[in-house]
Image 1 (cartoon, rainbow, N blue to C red):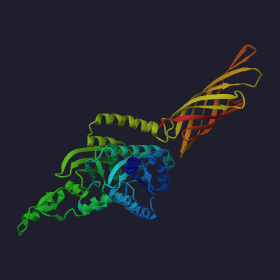
Image 2 (image 1 turned 180 degrees about the horizontal axis):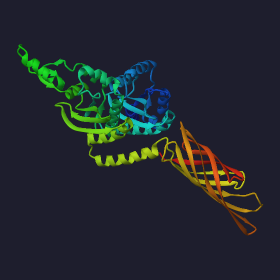
Image 3 (image 1 turned 180 degrees about the vertical axis):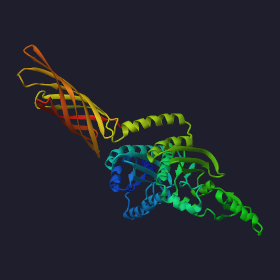
Image 4 (image 1 turned 45 degrees about the vertical axis):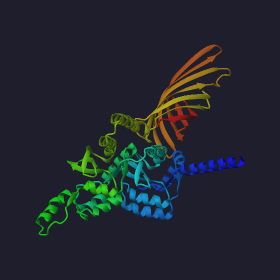
Length: 490
């Protein structure tokens, strides 16, 4: 009997151990973010500390040797993630997933673009991008970035194998070979950026295994005119030249030639059934971004979308629409409706430069009134400023012993808002109307007066609001020190 119990306990222990080993968290390496004027290593470390990242992954440190290789190679990588290179680093580090990020300037703002690559199969499984105003604001984006990417990775893990979609380098299907290497090396940085954003949008949909296999595709293009057994790979502009050589040759053709189109070349190189092809046209000073979805074998065009844009910022805004129209998921209408709502929320609410909030505070003026309760809300239709609307309720007066005192002070302020890291500072002014009631010996006395305010404060962690307001009616001066809680809409 004891032997059976011991055997059962041993079996349970073995099964539990096996499940624990197989059910462990996947490993993740986070490369330093690249881009001018940023502290890439600090951003990577801060991202690794986000609760969503820590709950989902086990972090793997990036070795100095891998870091040196990465930073040396980044001079030749622009916006489009080279998943061959990144996956190779991930396997070298023993990481299941690898995150790389890049920051670039877009007009008077910055764009952060982050990719999550599955090291085992070269797949871009998730991504994140966002425009923001200052590098100090990127800290405020990290929680949103971590949550969105980990949610997408978990969703992708439950989908199983998906049809593979190779992301061809921009412009590969219509550039002469002599100009191609120059074209894909980063001359049109904006188009490569838009291609990466489009790839992220498609990857986040969870309908394709997106493979931006830059290295292997570039190597395939170097073999564009090489001979496979019984085949010739050709571009359309060289098709007639190849046919002329065949027909004018005095030598007999002993093997059949099969003309293999560019999409099939890409599909073979990336081991993908589908190919995403991107081009950009400039017409009368305007840009037209054109994306095509092809079935690789047979060069069958499944969908093509063309959208005009005037600037990179406008191009970023249309990429979700391009992705939905290109892939045409079953819930396209619902996705488009969500997109409209997301744009509204992103522009007005989620922008780190806009402070929308509601809160309450307690404080004192060290005079009449001694105790002040405040309810307030802020509205931010413009970046780096907000309109504060609120009301103070005042209690306790020391003018006369035993006096019954109460006051209301509705106010409106306009303030400049400067975020930095997890805190922000504001400075502004405005005014309101003080309504006070004194009851002494059964007699009620009401006082009303307009006041002018000048105030400043700090919001710490989007939660704690500490402020001081100077108030005057130009014959006397009073002030209010308050501490409160605020809820920032994000």
